[in-house]
Image (cartoon, rainbow, N blue to C red; front, top):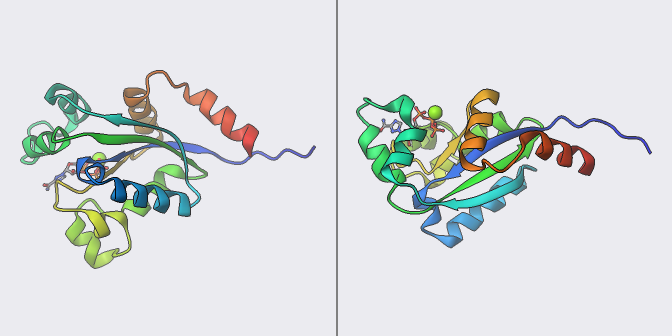
Length: 158
Ligand code: RTP
Ligand code: MG
């Protein structure tokens, strides 16, 4: 049989608490992901303590939005996803759009943050911004997963 290598990349996505407060919204977002041919390879619900939020967002400690960011992210359960596609990091960030929903509505009105984001901080989604952070963030939420194994499984299904 002819096998050809398909480029695969993994990224870590978060559907933040406002999305997960509504089952309907969460399903709609999953549909939007799959409509882009991005595969959901793993998912889990998460409920953070303040300490866990602080550990994930350590780089933002001291910024004016840090407390409200941690407050938002501990306000209820959210969902962590591992996504896979040929260019997953860029594709997912393109699908969610700019950080600030009000700007997204003006410049990229069909993105998920434009459609669902509530405010600069309560912007509904997260996506890893590089291969390095994707690796670390996937390990943060899915310590039991081997990224190498996940990529292998994807290859054998290609
Ligand atoms: P993310 O890391 O969540 O994908 O978002 P990002 O790179 O687009 O934005 P970043 O600057 O890393 O900020 C992380 C999260 O902090 C909240 N935030 N609030 N001006 C504000 O009130 C403000 N700025 C950022 C957002 O929840 C953002 O996703
Ligand atoms: Mg960021």
